[in-house]
Image 1 (cartoon, protein in one colour):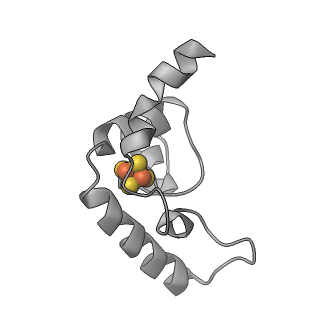
Image 2 (tube, rainbow, N blue to C red):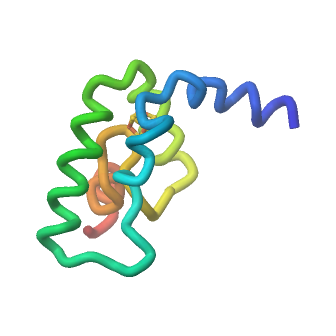
Length: 86
Ligand code: SF4
């Protein structure tokens, strides 16, 4: 749909495209807390140099994305932005 593709044109400039993409969501096999923390640090480092970080965070908060790193935040941090309990 044209409206949706226009709304998400920022994704074409995402720094997480390509080899970094696996860092942004937990592995299917699950992960320990320390593994999650290290993965999120790596993902957030990519976000910190992403030219569309604000667009990404706005989108994730708007749709209430509950999984992964978006706009330099994890799911708990986005819940806090919404004023919801962590
Ligand atoms: S802010 Fe992070 S998750 Fe969002 S597009 Fe950029 S690199 Fe990807």
